[in-house]
Length: 321
Ligand SMILES: Nc1ncnc2c1ncn2[C@@H]1O[C@H](COP(=O)(O)OP(=O)(O)O)[C@@H](O)[C@H]1O
Ligand SMILES: [Mg+2]
Picture 1: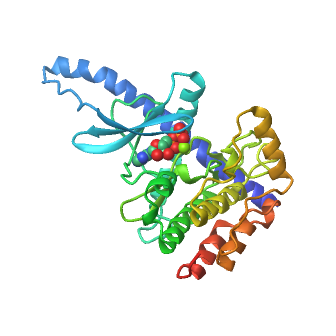
Picture 2 (picture 1 turned 180 degrees about the horizontal axis):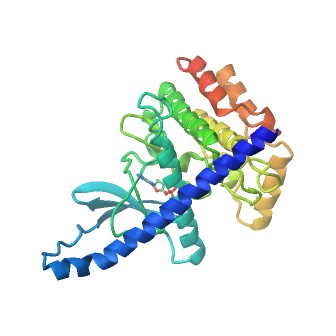
């Protein structure tokens, strides 16, 4: 027990020192860009203005951010920034940037052949961005949520299992680096043109050692323990079960609930906390149905770890779900 606490402490120190380094780097960058022109002037060199970011179109919006397709030096990328000029949303985006930067940095340590690679959205350093703007790799096929509604033809059983496996790998990687996502849902899974999936939107993600007792995540996908007890990686596994259900049914979870008022939301979440779950269709492949049921276990400890989800999906990848 003691050695486990030590290892959490070590990880915590590692993450904190990473953040300190990043903050120092950012401060230095700001400094060099603000003093850069004066040193060039004194050397009488020609000042070449940085390439401009050109916005092309709005790719999507969530609760916090607007995401724009942009061009920079003839390269496309997705620019995520707060939807509104609210201090709360700006702070949230700054935090998302710090966490994604840490996640990407850890990801870069993975060996080239590691199956956990490329399962998480990548962020680029681009000069001239504010600290609450994120430059992300652009995924032209957009979110799984949109694909379920507009491009069902891509979602064959094999493609669905591939998407879930990619996300399970992403969750396993996050568990290994002590990060919980806490907002896993089809809107936050992005698809590549090759049919691979990447986990995006780290707006609610946090370090697993923090006291994660806030109400987080999106109601339809939210694990019952969220806001009640310390949320762990198993909260993400619950949401993964809901994504598996979405891929079987190609519908919105709990579609008949509208959640127009706070009271309705509270009453619904109470039901989930009492064990209420979506109905798994009777024609569902039994192993797939069993996996969903296990992901939805009330007791987080009884839910499978991401690593086990990957194995189970491997067993059923050639079956009709
Ligand atoms: N890198 C990207 N490439 C293409 N579309 C994206 C990208 N990032 C986000 N989107 C689109 O924008 C939507 C909102 O982005 P998201 O990061 O989830 O914002 P929020 O934190 O507000 O939920 C996504 O559901 C998706 O449709
Ligand atoms: Mg989102």
